[in-house]
Amino acid sequence: MENKLLEVKDLHVSFDTYGGEVKAVRGVNFDLNKGETLAIVGESGSGKSVTTKALMQLIPMPPGRIKQGEILFEGRDLAKMSDKQMQKIRGKEISMIFQDPMTSLNPTMKVGNQIMEGLIKHQKMSKPQASKRVVELLELVGITDAENRMKQYPHQFSGGMRQRVVVAIALACNPKLLIADEPTTALDVTIQAQILELMKDIQKKTDSATIFITHDLGVVANVADRVAVMYAGKIVEVGTVDDIFYNPKHPYTWGLLGSMPSLDSEDEELYAIPGSPPDLLNPPKGDAFASRNEYAMKIDLEQEPPMFKVSDTHYAATWLLHENAPDIDPPAAVKKRMEGMAKTSGGSEGEQR
Image (cartoon, rainbow, N blue to C red):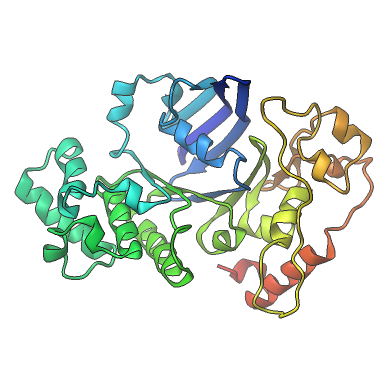
């Protein structure tokens, strides 16, 4: 327990709309240790961003609301805190890197002043002290000529450089938890790789914990320690990176893995998950993935599966893991992907990272 930084218990988040209550997050449970990186993956609309914004109470209230559940950060329940109490935590103890750096940065303020804000407010630094720290932060995130660059405006930076500035702002107060909400989606592949490498390097230096949100499982292999797969507002599978990539158990995880493009073969046909996610105004009675699952059984339409234990680190919510269920192998495209990843990692699961 001493190593636990965050524990999320039975979190439900809803949005009240003209059409009714949208149950965006439905009973999410996970924990995070100090210095660990947890990746939350899933399609758009699966509840990834809503879950993490709820941690910082950044969902608009109303129409959004945390319906029930606990968000224990170092033992303190963030779900019960007032906005004034959360202001002392946001930026100081928990920071967030958003998807689009241009909407995260104020176009009318110099970059240095934007990084200084948190230092002056939370760290109580004087302006000269904050200015010196800004130079250090810009150099840390790989921006050269920092003393001159801090006097420039966001439009004078490239997309990759702007995202580095956003990372610098998030790191300014040495947060214990860093939430990265698809931080590389708007960047090209080369810059994406640089930002991911930068975040890994910074985490080693600062020993901060990270929640990394993405729809791209390919990104996950290089940055995460554990992976939580979300679908229709629930976590349907959770395990170490090796568990998820080499021994996936949920059909939805199979679909995500099978849809990953590979550089190994030219004429490879990607696996496509049929159908579309359910309407969370009226969530289905049984397994939310049943209508898209070619291996669905009668019970999937009637009863929601519990989290079955695969190993001490690996759990999945699928009736295929019930002792009376038939033995089903992953689709050929998924097996091929798993074999390809094994070759890339030198044939050893433990060596992939």
